[in-house]
Length: 419
Image (cartoon, rainbow, N blue to C red; front, top):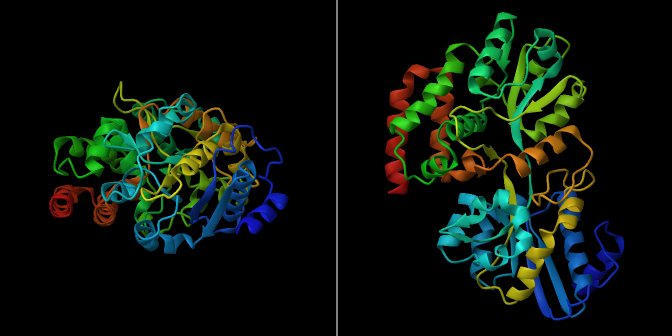
C-alpha cells in the first residue's frame, strides 16, 4: 500500500514535496477507513493520505475507501474488530452511539492546543460529556437565499429581526407573490425550519436538549416555537401544496424574471441549480436567519463531516497527528476549494474560493455563529425520533390546527425512544 500512496503523491494536487522537520518520530503503520467514495471527495482523501505519508518517512499510511452509504452500516463492526486508526463520520449526536459504546477515542488533548482555537465554531458539535471526540474537516452553511432584484423593486432591505422578516413577507404577499418556496415532500426541509425557529426562539442549548430527548415535546417552550412558526403559515407565506414537491421541484418558484416566491431557506447546495436556472449573482443574495428572541446568540445549521480516532487504534500518536494535519488552515483551504470539495473550511484562518455565497457562509460561520453549530434536524435527533417528528412538522405546515395531536404523538415517541 505504501507504493500506492507514493504514486498518488506524485499526481495529486494535495501532495507536498518537502519533508517537515520533526516528523520522523512517527513510525509504523497508520490505517484509515474513509467513506469519501464519490469522485471529488475520493481524490481529496487519496491526496490527504499521500501527503501525510510523504511528510513522515518512517510511517506507512494505509487507506481503504468504502462506499458512503454502506459505511453507515459497517462502521460499528469496523471499529470493533481489528479497528483502523482513523475513520470518517459526522458530528454531534451522530457520533454519540460510538462515543457511548467506547469506540471513539477522547481527543480533548488535541483540542486543548492553541491552534484549535481557530476551530471554535464547531467545538460544541464535537463535544459530548465535556470531552471532544473528533475533528471537523468541512461543512456548509444554511440560510435564507432570496431574490435581490425583487427586494430592490419593492424597496425592501434584508431583515435583522423576525418582525422585519414578517413585514417583508407582507409586502411580498401584497405584491402577489409568496414569501417562501419550500418542497416538503421528503420531510427534511420542514426540519430545517424547525431548527431555525426553535434555535432563534430559545437558543442552541435548549434545541440540543430537545434533540437529545431531555425536553418533552408538549413543553410550553416547544409550543412557543410552533406559535412563532405559525405566524408565517397563517399569513400565507409559503407556496401552496409544498408537500407535493421535492426541494428541487420547489426551486422554479424562485426563478425566472417574475418569480412566484422570493426566499428559500436552504443549504448552499441550492446555489448551483439556481444559477443553472439562469439567476445571476445580481439577482440572488443571502442573509442569516434573523433574530427572534433578543439576546439569543445565533446558532446555525452547518452539517459537518469529521475524522475520528478509533479507541482501539494501534497507532494513536500518528492518528492524532493526522487530526492536526487535516484541520490546519492551509490543508482546509485546499481540500475545500472549488476544484475539490467545494465547501467551507472550518478553520477560521483558512480562506475560500472567490465565490459570493461561499464567502458569505464562511464569514457567517466563522464570525457570527457564537450560539453553536447544529448538524440539522435529522442528524441531531435519534434517527427514529427524527423520522416521526419530521412527519409531524410537515403535517403542522399543512394543518396547523393539528398541533396538539402532533405534539402528543411526538411526546409518546420521545418517551418510548429515549426513556
